[in-house]
Length: 259
Picture 1 (cartoon, rainbow, N blue to C red):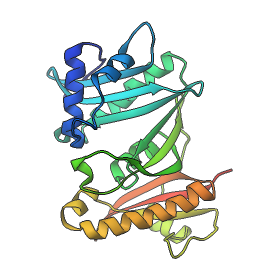
Picture 2 (cartoon, rainbow, N blue to C red):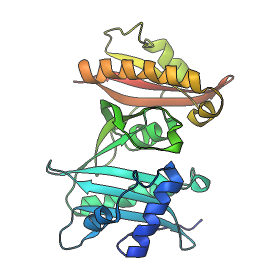
Picture 3 (cartoon, rainbow, N blue to C red):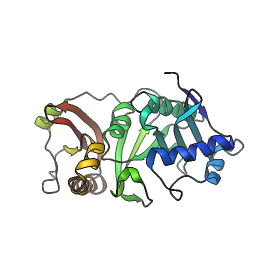
């Protein structure tokens, strides 16, 4: 599948970007990016951001938005999404890679993102593939109607990662090895070890369809553990482990004491 990635600037491209946000996340009009903001981020004379699109056969199938920050050398990744039928086909990775190269060409050396910490796909992308570190848990980050979240609070994990060069080399580990090596944290058991594991759903989408009540309880438990370790004890989310087992996919964060 041939995918074209390019910077967007034309009015029709920006309109397609807005429609894509509605398709990908189920956002209503008050939740999508306004045309005025998109125009501001695409001005060439005053570069305040980047808006990029992924195209397959001239159809926009993915989009990414990055914004400048008041911290020198740091960009904020505001949005990155791909149409459902094109996920797990490298489109998101190509978008992210192109965005990073554009930022590096402008002497940006670090990037921050926020994402749903209950979503394994995003945790794998930002922590495992790109070597990021989860540094802060943000409770109820957004308050907009969004069908993708199915009524769940829109909590977010703030991740920072250095750009350029190779991501920090992190030894691959199995879930079984990790569970034998590190304690599993829960609201009732939050030890002061150098590192602990935190379980999240292996298949968030399936749980939203059939186990919503259990999922909401799980999110509340996860929120309490993340808040305690990242926000109060200054740990970081440093690794992500996800693999199939006889009972389905298992996924865990490794929360490590920051040095």
